[in-house]
Length: 61
Image (tube, rainbow, N blue to C red):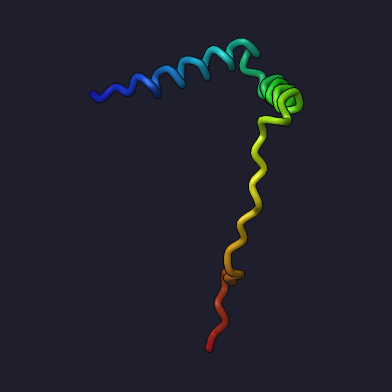
């Protein structure tokens, strides 16, 4: 089977990070928010891309 060392490393770090918070999603979310607030100068804010307004139910012609 094909092994990707980069993906393996990402999965390992993600597992360690989640384990450090006992897999508590609220705690992980709060930690990420604090990191975001601490480094506002590093954030990228992209404009919202809006496509053409297409109806889910096209009208019968």
